[in-house]
Amino acid sequence: MSLDRSDVEKIAHLARLALDENQVEGYAAELSNILALVEQLEVADTDNIEPMAHPLHMAQRLREDQVTEPDRRDQNQAIAPLVENGLYLVPKVIE
Amino acid sequence: MHKKTIVELAAGLKAREFSSVELTGHFLERIERLDGNINAFITTTAEQALAEAAAADEKLKAGDAGPLTGIPIVQKDIFCTQGVKTSCGSRMLDNFISPYDATVVTKLKQAGVVTLGKANMDEFAMGSSNETSFYGNVHNPWDRERVPGGSSGGSAAAVAARMAAAATGTDTGGSIRQPAALCGITGLKPTYGRISRFGMIAFASSLDQAGPMTASAEDAALMLQAMAGFDPRDSTSADHPVPDYSATLGDSLAGLKIGLPKEYFEEGLDEGVRSSIEAALEVYKGFGAEVVEISLPNSAMAVPTYYVVAPAECSSNLSRFDGARFGYRCEDPKDLEDLYKRSRGEGFGAEVKRRIMIGTYALSAGYYDAYYLKAQKTRHLISDDFKQAFQQVDVIMGPATPAPAFKLGEKTDDPVTMYLNDIYTIAANLAGLPGLSMPVQPVNGLPVGLQLIGNYFAEAKLLNVAHKFQQETGWHRLIPEGLD
Image (tube, rainbow over all chains, first blue to last red; front, side, top):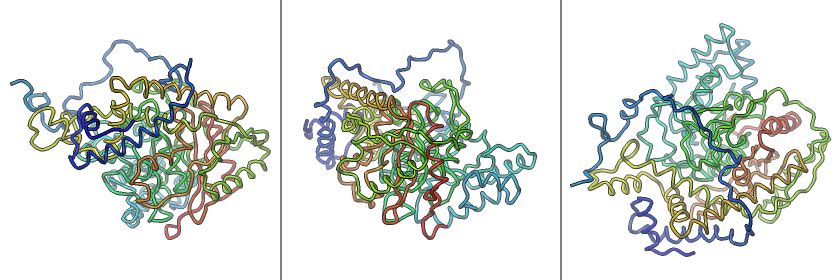
């Protein structure tokens, strides 16, 4: 699969990444090369092979539904770009 | 003092030949004098280190010291350290002062180590040469024009240049073993889940694993002992007993069955590396080990499988960097989408963006089955290859890298060429198996790594197999010229 300029722009939008205009062509070429590497998988016979998501085939561990973490909001918000009254501030979403 | 291993330093501290404050001062002086040309450290924490050393000296005086008490180490800058900048090698986290400690950091502090600072690394651990770091290249202590490997390049260079007695690293596709090989140190990637991932900034969560990077296998056993164990804060932490890793280091290797995967010795392997590996195998034969050829038939699938699985997981994990809650935020965002896009576009470097985009594409509607599902199936085939192999042999051996360290800038133009550096290390991550690299005979003055791969939770066996070799040979004792 070879990607062109518009493919890269679409992917970058999905990933919420702003790219420099003059770098899009370069990314298209590099990503196409990486996909060519990945497409070597096509030759593998994977009929009747289960997909493997976890190396130890572990089941999700469950715990009691109890509060175990202390409230660390102040420490966590101390490093935020912009906060007010305990809320994270971003540009207005609804006019 | 810097030439000594942890085991020797601990003996010196205990016998009061020197104090931890003196030892820490000695390493800090070396960092000050040498790191300008190596760039292994992103942050040094001298004041804190000396305070930790003074506390360690009190413990030593009181006879309350463990094997790591007062030993100066460096943490890879991927581990969250409370009150200290934790950058992950990225502009995105250049302003991030962690509000908490990673479990690895907590456990090593409890063991009494002194932390000298935070080690340079490829951005978000994505790289094989340490050239993607926002903080600049790390130079290989054996040849400053060459790369130290990556992504734990700063950790490897710091130990190789003896600017720290040991380091922590993380390994998603070879990021402990490959730099350990290129810098001539011992690096261990344990079984997936052996060491907690809590507070270790996530790259690809089904592959990421922390481990020790040290001057010897004996030292790696001590570090692993402190780092390993079940952690309820990591949802995939292994609830499996932790053995005494030092107790079995000296076990006899007579009758050990060593498997050599024929796929790891085919075209593309440097001839010098091949003969160093062959010479090491002769040492093992001398111990009474038996060497047999095995096959891992799906080896060629490892790199392509990894470059679907790892980017897919990274595109999901790195979505947390949104410019809203912590880390880099762009100037004057015009709306929320602009805030996300420019914060991420400006905060991430090119390699991280490439991998996020590959992962986003592989997981996008219409492509999921062809890429991600297919890769999960080939991952299963790779894992089954090892299962078969470990029915025949106790340990697998081969090269850690196709060649010794390459020159800075040599492979930065083509990402795919760079990815092929990890051709021998990636499979162990996909299968979740432990792997170790240790120095064997150098080629033209450059270190060469022998890789050992073991069965699940066989870290003690790998350390035993490595330690016996290190007792017999002196390759792990070599120190780069001008740094001794």
